[in-house]
Amino acid sequence: MAQNSFYVTTPIYYVNAAPHLGHAYTTIAADVMARHHRQKGDDVFFLTGTDEHGEPVALAAEAAGVTPRELADKNAERFKALAPVLNATNDFFIRTSDPEHVRAVQEVLTKVKDNGYVELGVYEGWYCPRCADFKSEQEIIEGNKCPIHLIELDWEQEENYFFKLSKLQGRLEELYENHPDFVAPQSRRNEALSFIKSGLNDVSLTRGKLSWGVPVPWDEKHVFYVWFDALLNYYTALTYARPGEDLRGEFWPASYHLIAKDILKFHCVFWPALLMAADLPLPRRVFVHGYLLLEGHKMSKSLGNVLDPFEVIDKYGSDALRFYLLRDVSFGQDGSVSTADFEKRYDSELANDFGNLASRTIKMLIRYRDGAVPQVELDPAMHAEFEELNTKVSSLIGRAELTPALEEIWVRIRRLNAYVGDNEPWKLAKDPERAADLDRVLATLIEGVRVVTVLLHPWIPDRAGRLLHALGAPEDLHDTDPSLTIAGAQYGARVPRQVADIEPLFPKQQQPA
Image (cartoon, rainbow, N blue to C red):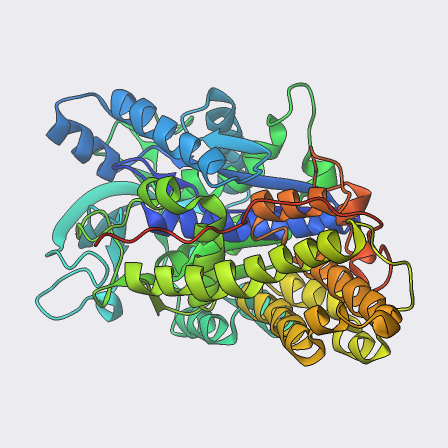
């Protein structure tokens, strides 16, 4: 992969039901990273999509009285519609029912077989149909239940082809020892490594009792186990995402896979092992985030405790949702979400801290200087506050520490608000002898507003774009525009010359009486 390439993926989302806020969470996080790397000038590829095979889809389709294909087609469109509503800039949307994906899966897994990592056997064990996963004794909770879906497990016995995972235990341990940042955060790395060191068993590569899946080319009675089909999407998408091009040379291995902790075993153990068996390069990093919790539980379609991202966006806009999910819940940890907390963040931080700062700074420039920004030396006291802020934010995003990066920016927003209070420009405007002081304060404020807005753009691209346009940037602003570069987000680098008035960025919502 070229040095200036950045490839980020979300998990592909299961089509047995409609999208919810948990799906939006990962997509937003990946989009923040993709947008930031475009600001850096990197060649970016951002992938998301849908996982459409396996028993959960077949069971959901049967319950709905439709075919698995009909259910997949219907729900895939709903997931595809979610990305633009979130203002996500994914470069491709993969469906695992795509014929190009199917062919590539068959090629890779045939290579795994040819390399000696596949054998025929009989599997017996406890199985969760909603996870599409056989559970080890350590993974089963009281009542013989799945720890994720809280349903009783089924005892399954069938003839399968097995992936010889056990043969790769030593190589996986070496991977974790030699590349300590392969999985983050550290707690998730430790969890994956503990699973590996507890002893790996061979796992089912195919299913003999299902028909809704990728056919096994060497045995037509089997389809590939859905997880191996799904994991390969990150690789197969690059073979056909751009018609007539093979993007693997530019973007593989992936820079970041973003996943939730419930699929850690598959992405941090099975996935690198599968790539090793196929003689393919491993991804650089897997970042495992926590759950969004509602009433103390992970949001889950099967548990029925989901929030509709479309409803939130209809009322507040996509920027407010993007900001809240990565501000209120530290990315990488579990965190509770609620309407009350959302509204509090919206009012106190988006409307007051940031929106009001931008609005009153622009209005003071218009009132006192006819919108012309004084081209004077900025207040040296503020230089230290902003020194290397852009590199700090970039470094944090490079480690997928999206919430701390946002806090770094917000510290400066609070400092700019304090600067207004400390200097009281409305009082300076009343004293003609202090015109030079007013010029310095106004120029310092608007440059600070510009810098934080450029850095905030990956989180709130719509409102940040509107504000930057009011500061002189093009109206149809793109992530690669010079007005948005991370290098240009250096304090004092691009002081605006003229400002235009702007409507409130985050207007207060009228609450019911």
